[in-house]
Image (cartoon, rainbow over the protein chains, first blue to last red):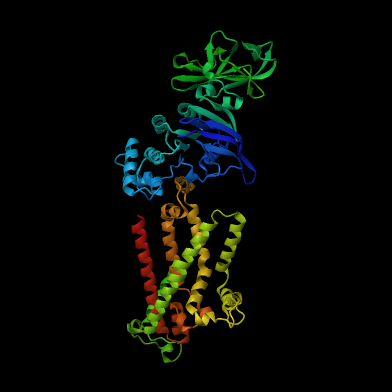
Length: 344
Length: 268
């Protein structure tokens, strides 16, 4: 059990690619922490640096009360689950799970008994004598988890462990993973590019872009008050409306209509509103014609043309509108960004 | 094409193996059919067994152990090396493989020469050791390792790069040592490549004639290809050497079958 402290961590690859740029991060003991960002943002490099698979150019990594920056991966007592699960094809499931214990020179009987205990905890009874190729993707994923659990690490490091599963299975595995982490209470760092996964699983999320952390917060904070337009655009299954606007005497104006009054200095701004918080009504500050309607199941995403701006709004399933209809929009929970950063 | 270049020579060997065909004299003109006499003679010929034994040592030492071992070691050592180091070394090793046999043989004669040979000069032995005369079998084994390692190295490089990095990293995270990683992750992954490689280099080495260019007809290095050459061209006994060639062909076939059997059973 241990927290993870990262300070001033920089990683530059040969050829001058700056993967991590002076990162500071503190992950609490037992926390389920997600590293979220588009591909190439450095999240996997950060995870691999914590694991010791990459050596940082500068900065330090502490796990618990140990500085592990210069320790080899095997001495860090962390367990990693890879995207491809990395199960050894020539070993049975029980041998795969017991592999880290074999390296620690535990007797075959002891380690197999332990592997069976962990295996049955993860619902792998009856599969222990098989080989990885005979298992489904979901089962393989659980074997990889079991191998990580079996060696009692001080931290779990997950590198997109759900992305090789099909959509339905991924939801099941997500719930399973969250419950397992709660039971074990082991500090977990989880890399994903899927914002919904990060929101669903994590206690806290770090949103990364180009080797830097753009925001750290709980899922609620990151979703409700994105700190900048990058995070605003990245989080949320329907993209946030980011509209050009101006502030005049505290009044926030979009398409020359007043949306709200905020304590913000005058000037040009970007106004952010989630489609979920835009109501389609008969009376509202913004008016326009419905361009498209996309069905999202229990709701629909309606795109409305307002003076040349496309504004998305989510309406419940019984409130659908026909394309071409003129409607009014009433945005709430308006966020104001200046130079890309949240000001109110 | 296959008929002209493979089946016909095969059948022709079978035919002359069953005659007393010679390079010169009466039976060169009108060879007589002698049935299985040549085969009978071969199986009771001590020099044939002597040659076979030398061939076994030669193949085992230079190919199965030498080229395999050195090729794998080089591939494993170079996998994380800087690009230019790897490229340079690969180029040098490849050079040994692509140079014409006659050139290579000449180089080695110069290396192993008693007077003024490179190796004697390096060792500072005075008077020099006549390597090719005193240690003829060792000479051609070392020569053949040097010559053929490139192929094994390239094959193992390809095999090693097919191991998913995450498997090696899983081993590293578990804290496994170099030997443990080789045993648990690397060898199981490249087993099939290793078998194929061993089969190929065994067959090539078995039939290799280049050592003749270095040790000539030295009796202590008379491997089977040299033996056949000496019987056919030097001794003129085409019929007898044809019979031996056929026996060698059968041995090769048997070897290949054993390998394939093992490959199918162990790796299925």
